[in-house]
Image 1 (spheres, one colour):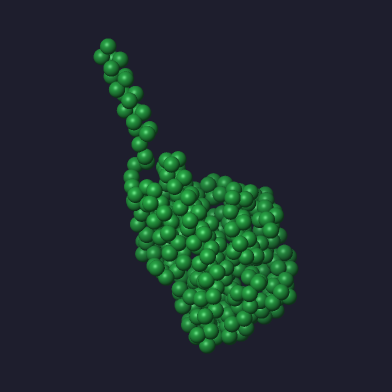
Image 2: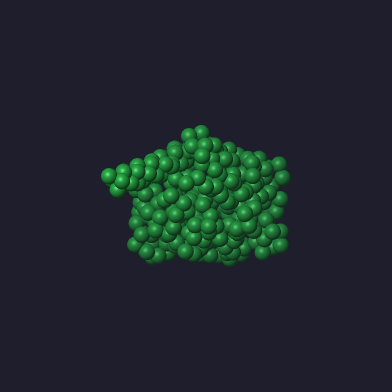
Length: 331
């Protein structure tokens, strides 16, 4: 009888343990962007607030401006190892480890913010998530940033205007297109753009509209090409989570995170339309010349991309080829 009682008690304890939520822990969120200024930081705070509305027991701590002392690209290593739970991470920073991530900045594959949001939940999104999971991370949000060119010395339009420029674009596959147009390239995180322009290491750059403003790149450049109907540079810069940390969440918590991501995605998409306007305003106020790409200039870039960046990417793996087919199938 005593044995039966002990067995029954053990079963009750085990059942209770299964019903409990995941062990409470502090989730650290690291990123390189300015607090309460950059849209990526503000959208992170929207995500956290939405999670805490439904589960106040999940504790977050946000470390903006690389204040956790993890360099931007090194965040991926920390996520893979599980020493960092979450980060706002420009996906192209990890192409050295996951070459397929170059699809998240491939010229000519995203045409607008609305187009980027139509990809959410698509076969492309699912395939990208599968690849991320195999490499130790989980993509939580769907934050796409539009960007543009800025130069110290010249107006940039089509491929014929970048010959001799020392440029940054954040991805080696993208940069193969720039090389074919006659520029030299330097692959650095966005935190290094300002001093590189200041020192002359760079003469021009591509990056997000958010970064041009929050990192005051308009102070080091006199010409900007941004806005209009034709945007060449888009990058997925989502909240990502260590797969180890994601797998520790209960099913209920995962659902809460996904619902919070939906709210932050809508907030971020609206903010990116405003970010382009703010970039134009910042450059205009600084006395710079601002213009957008013409249809002919944009088409010339895409024609070049299809001869350089696209085949180079497809050759990386069967999964890369599949990703390019999937992203271009959604209009």
